[in-house]
Amino acid sequence: MVIAGIGQTEYGRHPGRDTLSLNVEACRKALSDAGIAKCAVDGLLVKVPTSRYEAMYGQKLAEAMRLQPRVGGVWDQGGAAPISMISFACMAIEAGQCEVAIVALADNPKTGTRQAYEKGWGDDAVHGWFGVAAGYGMILQRHMQAYGTRPEQLGAIAIACRNNGARNPHAQLRKPLTMDDYMASPMIVEPLRRDDICLVSDGASAVVVMREDRARQLGVATPVPILGYGQAHTSWDVALRPDLTSTAARQSAKTAFAMAGLAPADIDVAQIYDCYTVAVLMTLEDYGFCAKGQSGRFVEAGGIELGGTLPINTSGGLLSETGLPGLQMVIEGVRQMRGSSCNQVADARRCLVSNQGGMMTTHATMILGR
Image 1 (spheres, one colour):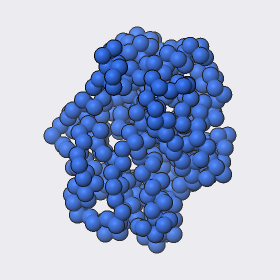
Image 2 (cartoon, helix red, strand yellow):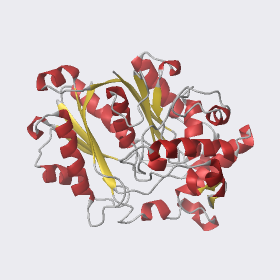
Image 3 (cartoon, rainbow, N blue to C red):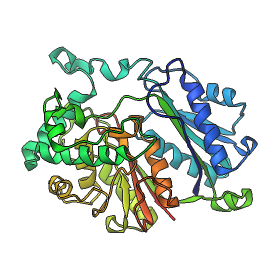
Image 4 (tube, rainbow, N blue to C red):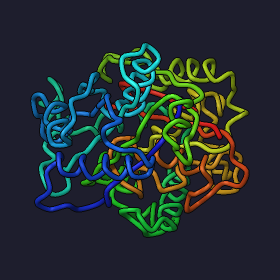
């Protein structure tokens, strides 16, 4: 299987645009990038918009695109949905259920509504648990208590991602960050500062998936092989988890590495889901790039920076490029494998991409090659 085409809107503010129009734009650009006609598409998988749920959303998008796909549907695994949708598209193609699939997502919480992110969370809302940040704050408190994780180590992640985004002409936030800036940023939910938390963004992204031989038949210029994928889901709410410092990311990565026949040491560059800086720390550990409790030292020593052992989030990640949930990270992985990234890692031949949703509740992993 290959990713044959990629497309995205501008990220940031799109006042007056609904998610259907944003999705159509990204899908049109992905088809143009692949160099194929819309009539070749017989699969359409789309993530439900987080900000405003709509019934039969997949059929609405198909109608807007003038498609009647053989395979279609809407996924909701939060930020893990993009890689999960790509993996289901691959399986549908392997099973002969379709030949060419578009995977897409769009949302507009910046100029629409962000109520889904702000609401009181479960029965604990009466005690002050409001919004997703509260759950990540609890997880980070536990990581700090267990492993001595320090704010400066979280700052190293924010700085690396923000500085990469500053060099990306398409990033929503193109402002470098220093450690002094990070330490001065206000607390949102202790111990999380403003610069630990991803952006709020309007926009859309899409990719085209097909078999490698089909890509050759259609004359696709720069297909990128999908070497492996996996998913696994913690599922329990934060307050019910027996261990707050480990997640199902471990099994998700294990599945993807086994499928690809690779190990963490074989990865040249990674796009690690950075909705919150603590998610990066824990994903690095659960994926086997660092021993448990050692990721703070790894990032503090420059391991994730350009030129480091494992450069991450080369387009800026959710902290700088866009806060949209995850498909943009796959797109940056494709650019790295094509050699066209604005922060290209020299001689990179293997790129790992992580997606996760909720409060480290769902997880999906993908490995791309050249």
